[in-house]
Length: 178
Image 1 (tube, rainbow, N blue to C red):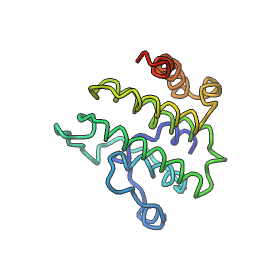
Image 2 (cartoon, rainbow, N blue to C red):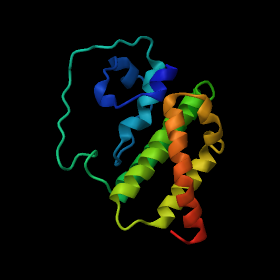
Image 3 (cartoon, rainbow, N blue to C red):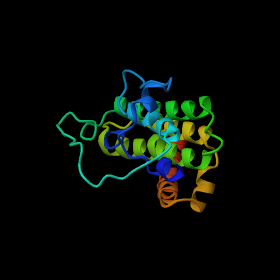
Image 4 (cartoon, rainbow, N blue to C red):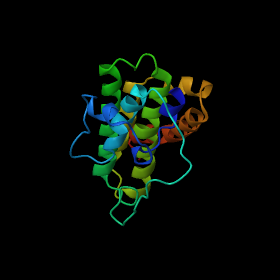
């Protein structure tokens, strides 16, 4: 389960027994993109057995308006909200403590790394307040993530490297030179 949290991927490539979804009181947050990221960990934690099926059972149709092709500040904010729900779910259902390193890593990848990367690449003009707020909330949610990540998975190390590279952006934005 720990490795699944670290590399949960999209729910679009997973099949869950009906009762895992229906019997779980949490529901997809409405009105946001990336809502599957909010509940993926809760569903995987409840699963008792996992199988890998090598054959394709699902085909993802990509179109020009797909979330993977459209970047906006609103979609970045949606990804952040999905991360917040992910943490709220972990607290509410009591698995944050047991899986804290994995949840930290998963949250940081979704909330901070993916959001900052897509924001910097796709949103123009950049709003320095957005970057400052994103960085500040990440630091408030998991203050010492970058110190611990180097002792964990490859994804943790990559996240830490990206976080360290983005720190000058935060420093510049706080100094008014952004």
